[in-house]
Length: 195
Image (cartoon, rainbow, N blue to C red; front, side):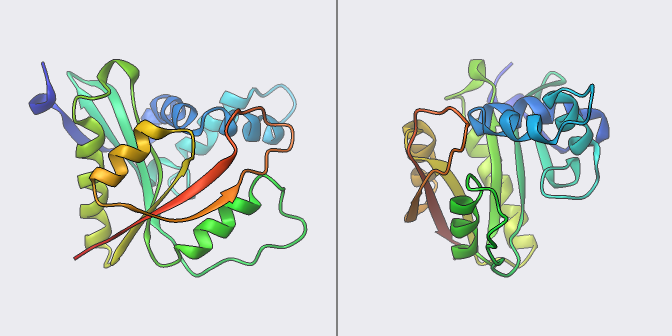
């Protein structure tokens, strides 16, 4: 079983747990911190993620997700969608989201790769590349002329993958962490212009 046995498929509501695991990996703990703040009484951060993943709409939902499977097991995934017009940043926006929104605003109109992750045992086997090719196909089908992704500055492996795929550094913002604990310091916006 290997790369050529990989199947890419749209995610569905029953894939919520796999989507949560993928976004938890990709976010380096940030999403768990955010979901903790969204939890209702008696709800865990993961419960919030599962609820959100089961939705058909919204930035983090199965409706925007593609899964990479081998022998029926999810080994990676992608969440992507077109970014609309730049959004205003008001004073009520939590500080940890401001730098991300600033970078997204610089990428308005692009196909945004919000999440891309591969299970640790299957990294360096081409799954990330296959998911990026799928993201590019989706971007072109949507009529987008650019793709964008935001990566933490300490994630050198991911950045190398994106640069090999044609993404280029465009901007950087200091992370706004609040009480989220993460050793990294900056978010970086990478853009790929589609020919």
